[in-house]
Length: 84
Image (cartoon, rainbow, N blue to C red; front, top):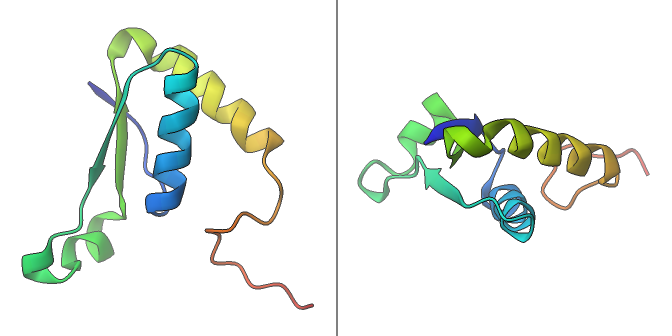
């Protein structure tokens, strides 16, 4: 398995995994959260990673890139605040 990307949070990870699997690409999510250390590793390493097989990597990159281009600007998991 090869790291495809580091999602910002769990909702983004689940959305991307679902999109990949809908396109026939098995994906694996690994969170860096550890309850024993209360998320300390997430601060250092990020939320986690999504992995796909080496054979599916190039196609998975294309799918995720297309998904990002088609996604609305304000996603529910974005930390950005608007000035509305």
